[in-house]
Length: 555
Image (cartoon, rainbow, N blue to C red; front, side):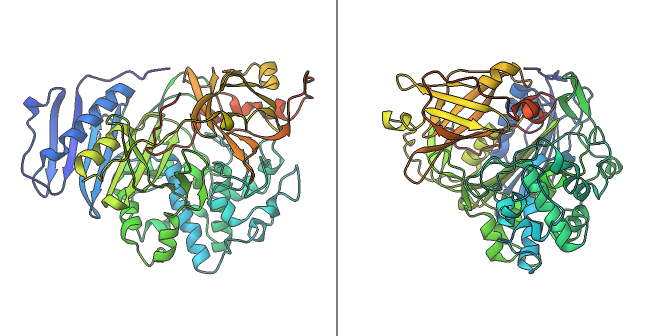
């Protein structure tokens, strides 16, 4: 895996602290901290030092040039910090106020906007999306679009295949959303349904782009303008932007560290290095830890001119089961809802508490927003490197700044022979992967994907067990990762029989037992859409949806 060049062994730290304690750390005793710039309304407290130490270590381990974090306690920002550099190769001290791309955290803003339209009577959550998007259709099947509801878009249950492009020349203006989805998208080989809408959760960026278009259509305002007037302004998120030129004019922004999406070479991402007008509602916003902390405050206490308390709480309630990790993981509306489970990877403790969150990955940047209602605690972390999340730092923040509940025993993640017996068989995806042959031998599942073999997509032949019904399929040579872990979930029917082989990139339906000598399948749409696995497309932009802190061992 490509490692970005670490600018220096010295981290430059800028901290804004409000409240708690009296001790200010000394630069001379901080080891690799050469300088510490502190602006406080109340004295700095050493209670934050374990968190700062954890962030520094995680930045070194992941080769992150710079990061900004905020801690929200009792509805107030008590710590905001900028660490490292805004630029991968130059000494530009990071500030807590610095702007980053936030990737899929944008979906939380999009959900709030569409939920407003629903509450105000302009949109019916259970109506077909074609009631609001009459020009939207799929060339493959005219019946597909009317079968998708607004609720399906909000909950990632539309079954629309995931697809996004990093940069879209010709589709960067405000009308790009409607122009693209009313025209070129429906005719593209990437526009199809993986399963019947509503059958399962499967993360999809086009689904949230369409949610933004519904808001745009129902309100009569371009998506960007609606979110600015009705979400960002009342929440006092005045430095959250959708246009690169707004970020450049602001001046306080981070440069991303990434591999170029076409050449695969090291690349410094500037605000205007790429843009995508039709993906803005799914993940193309810029923000900072102060603005994102306002979302934490909103989730905690509400704001009636934004959403009613009932709808605000519905955002944070499980709306659809992700069918992973013992059914502890769900999606609300624009938020991941982890129900009763936090596994601390260092202490091996399992805590029963709800964590509401959303993560984001976009070229050169990583983002995380967490709210833990039971602890009245929020945490926001932004970094300027691809796939570089401060997971351990979040765990450290919880366990050192909060009074944690009594830990429980780690649940049993193992599977029985009866579990394994559910999965073998022949599955088929008519659009992407073709036939998938799953076999069982001594409680170990193997997989064969003939069309992958034919087009040269390398993958592991063994499915690695994770939790009941969930496995890891490793793909090779597609991203900067040596082995890309693709999450596989076997979706069961009401009688406990396997019905679908689900991944984010493809879904295959169970066909029956494997014939004794299966013939070579016909050339399916896999040969047109295999580009979904190309390193210049989906994988480097948006990997598997970020899962909060349930961390069962991978066996």
